[in-house]
Length: 347
Image 1 (cartoon, rainbow, N blue to C red):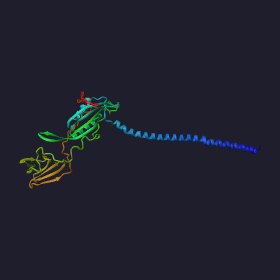
Image 2: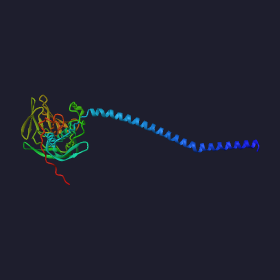
Image 3: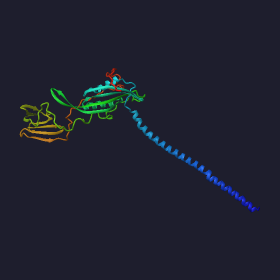
Image 4: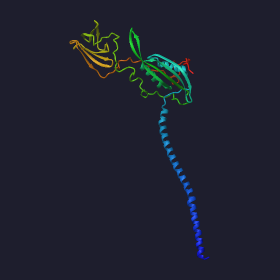
């Protein structure tokens, strides 16, 4: 065999080995390495995304902590370790001392929770709306942790006798459940040394309006006190600062500030013999001027319609006692140990 043939065979063998090795590397080995590299790249990208998410979570948690820490340091409520039901009853009864026609209170039950316990009371009754509003305000804004739920309020129109005269009275008929909490984790309560919060930190203590009293009455109230009706009774004389009216033949002397039916005398002018009276006719305010010389009556509307001076505002409790379990309550004479009847439970 010639050298050329041998060299050709040798080159062919080397070529075959090179082709086979290249095929193995490109088709077998490199795909596995590429796949491993792709997986490693994916893992790096996932770790980078996870790290970015953790950074965002850390920033969000820092913001939440910055907001929560001042709230925690300024916490106002107190959760006593122990609480007597009789003390809660005494406290709620004290809050209803003014403006309540009836106030019925009974213990519904006691709940043992995982983080706190609470008594539940059923409260029903009748009261002036302003007095009921004051009761709810004190329950929700005292330093103890109380919760009012299932509140139901409806209008109740009744009659009362005063000095032999029957008067209409608009009350709020209400029912609610009150939860009194106690037994929370240690240090969850605000410190006893906490300063008293300013009035501006609380919601308004008085209701802006009475929803059970209309802005304008459909019918005017009766003249139960037999007052002078300046629209019907005649003006007889004006002497100095006194105006003399005739009511059913009976002379009545009035001066500035005197009450009349639906209003008051604003002024009495002897020089012009004129009497000015401000009336509130069921929410429509009017000024009536009576001229003795001519006998004429002049009317002028005053401002908007309002019954702000019409309804009787219920009395409210200004200085409430401290709630049981809060600073100052331990030595308060209100709280005594006594059991109260429980509400019968149905199976």
